[in-house]
Structure formats: structure tokens, C-alpha cells
Length: 112
Length: 320
Image (cartoon, rainbow over all chains, first blue to last red; front, side, top):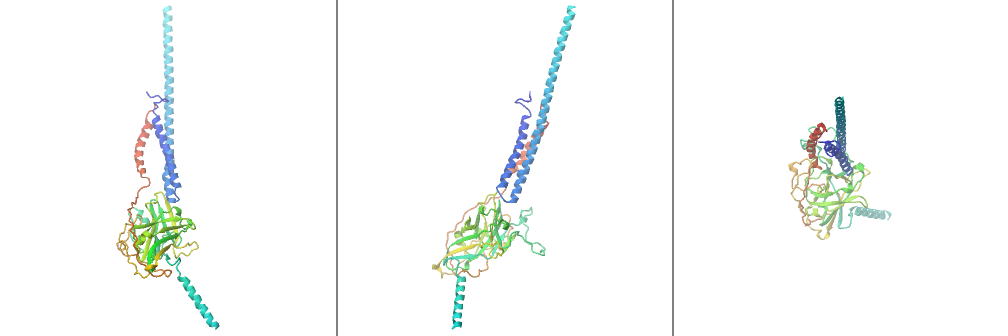
């Protein structure tokens, strides 16, 4: 049974994947900056900035959005799980009261 | 008597002036030659298109000549923008007017380091000198097929910063194939320039007239006076013609010939002489690599194919 917040978190692999996408964007930006900084030839610099800079920014944005969306889904699932737990506790409490009430009623009838 | 003295003085002055004009640049065994004609070429931009190099001139000549070089008139260029050559320069030196036995030759190319004239990181330039086997003509930034060359014999030029920035090289390896009209080409060494490097060296043609003119390229030849009466040199050019490098249009078949480069003889400056020298042939095998600077980029579509389904599944899977 998967339990949110523990080691078997079902959202953990996807969160790691999306974080890796965002991290690869930062790497692309760094590589683009490095290539553009090692030459003064403007056409090469433009190619490096487009391939590294713009693509890196896009990867960072996409990765961040995916991480945010998945974190929201994980939070909603956790909330649902907690609600279910509370409802289960309430149900168990009602059953306990009902059993206790039935036992008291049968004892009263027996004594009378 | 006064008229006689005046005539003698005038004759002496004229004789002295003429003698000064005929004195070689260096000493008796070192002669400095200036190149003429000179021409520089750049890759044909149509060669990068999907149809390849478009041949020949335009069907209809433009009413006014279209300049193909944005650089100042009278400048010569050698350039590299990794991983391809962007400019090369051909120089022809009139060795047929040099007498005596050639024992050495050095090339000095004073550089115009003004970035407005096109200079870009000239201190990092790695330029080599090869033999030009085609006809050298006076062109500036031409996109036509350049003259054929032979790089089996080549020499390297090195950048020297002081006293003034210039390229210097010993052309001894090329003298084995020196012809009466000694044509050479200055071009980037594709084996030594990295794919990420970019540079451009600029120097002045002998006929440059603007204020930024630097001294033209100078070939200093050393001759041995012992063979001053030797017969004129025989042409010893190799008929090997390597294929034109990428970006340059292929030349017409008639240009690929064993004929030595034709040059216009220089006015004065040199005395008659020369015999061919027997320098050892230096032939080296070289590998020129072309391709993408970052071929790993071809893995990106594969990565996208893997990541996209994983992301879709992760975003639609129940997390409870």
C-alpha cells in the first residue's frame, strides 16, 4: 500500500524527473553562456544563445511548471487521504458509541 | 666654369639618386620582394544552400558593380570561423627577377589590427602558407572559385606581437617547388584551428591608399652570389591539385592545370639571377574533419520520446 509522505511516495519518481528537466535547462544555459563567451564571432554567439539560452529557459520553465503541477496533485492526494483517515476515525467512533449504547440498553432491559 | 661645375654637380646628384633607388632593401644577399598581384577570396554563400554552389555569373549584369567585401578597399584577409574557413589570400612574388641561388626565404606580414577593418582576435590566428598552382589575379573578397593550391608543401606562420603585430614564417619548405612566378596562398590551418575558434587577420595590399595602410607583405629571399651566372630556374611545380575546400565553388576544369601562376613583374627592387634550389620535399598526411560541433544534440529527440510519455503517465496517474 502506497502511503503519501513515506518512502514509497508514488509522486517521488515523477517529481525527480521534472526536477531533472529543470536542472538540464540550467545546464543548457551554462553551456550556452560558455560557448558564447569563448568566441567574439557574433553569428556563433547568436547560435549559442538561441540553442543554449532560449532552450535552457524553456526547459527550466517546463520543468518548474511540471514540478508545481505534480506537487499540487500530490498535496491534493495527501489531503484526500487525510480526509479519508478522519472519516474512517469518525466512523469507527460512531460504531463504538453505537455498540456501547446497544450494550447499555440490553443491560437495562435485563435488570428490569 | 660655373656652368661646368653646375653640370657636374647635377650629374652627380642624379647618379646618386638613381643608385639609391636601385639599392636592395637589405644587404647584398637579402632581397625584399613585394607581392603583385594579390587577391583574397571568401566562400560562396550559395554553397551553404540546399542546391549547392550556384555556378557562373548572374545572367544579367547589374548596372553597377556589387561589392562583395564590406571591408576597406586595399585590405587582404585570412579568416577562420570554426569549423570553416572564411577568407584566404593569394600572393604572387616575382622570383624570376631574382638572380643567384635561392638559399632561404621568409615572409613577414604586417597586420592591420583595427577591428573596423575586419581584424578579430588576430593573435590567435593559425595561418599556413601553401603553393598556389592556379593563376593569381587582383580580386578583393571574390566569391568565385579560388585558384588551385597544393598544400603538400606548406609552412606555418606565427604571430609576433612586437615591435608591431605581424605574421612571420620561414618558407624554406616551399622553395623546393618555387617557380619563377612564386604564387603562395595564406589560409587557415584546419588541423590546428578548433571548431569553436574564430579569428580574422587583415593586412594591406601594396596598392592600399587610405590612412590606415600598413606595410604590405614582404618576402625576403636570401641568395647565394656563387651561382650568379647560373641559368634561369626551371619550373618544378607539382601537378597535384587538392579539392577545393568546403564553401568555395568548384573551379572550372581548365583552371586545374600544371601551368605555373602568371604574375605581372614587379618594377625594380631586385637584380637578375636565380637557380633552383634543391630543398628536401616535405610531404605530410593531414586529416581534415568536418561535421557538427555538438553531435550529441541528435539524441534530444530520443530523450523527448522517452520523457514525454513518462511525464504524461506521471501527470495522469492516481497518487493515492
